[in-house]
Length: 314
Image 1 (cartoon, rainbow, N blue to C red):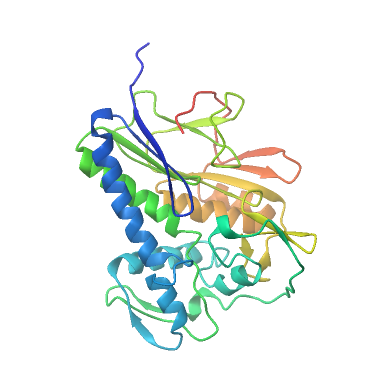
Image 2: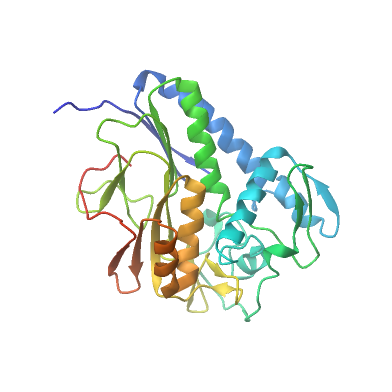
């Protein structure tokens, strides 16, 4: 059996782990440069944690029509599309709720434990409150709205970085992983891209972990077990239920989904956590292969998610 030689580099980006893999190892440096350029641009456009980002400026100036760059417009369009596809289960207007729950800075800077904070049930403003014209490059948000693109911007960065890296490489295949959001582009290895489906995207490659193989598109994992913190003895996490404005308290602790793009996979994975039991019906109706892990650690494979295999690239 032939073995495909891969070029692999690990790094940090967007506050999380990054892995880039190419099937042409001699072009790894060029691919990394191209991917880094895209990821940097996404960070400057759509980060909620950078005071100098375009998104932060939009959030600081509610009630005004703001002209935005094509890249932020693309990221915002992805967030609003996610809201439409999931009937609001994934909603970019959760920004205030996420911040009030304690996720108010880059996750690496958040204290793992701290004093109590006061949270109350309050439906988020809702994505329909945003007035957005992608063609004109303008957005208007009312004073009650704070936009957060956490459910889509990182996945969009993975999709765009994979495409840019492939263009730089010129041929072959590319995989980009950003903290559990994985996009592939070009021609895959003969054996396909084997992906480890850990709850923690930074977990080392382990033969005991479940893997799947993909040929194209993307895969994303959303989990309540990794980005979490404690306040006053109460465990909180970053996935907000738009209906309550509080961290989701449903049956799933982790959802992994395969889709045509990493953005679509991330939208579906986040929606599954929020939807709870009804996610199984929604994923099946949309023919989205998914792996759901409940609070007891039992794995539920949905819509054709394959049985476990061993080999893993990422």
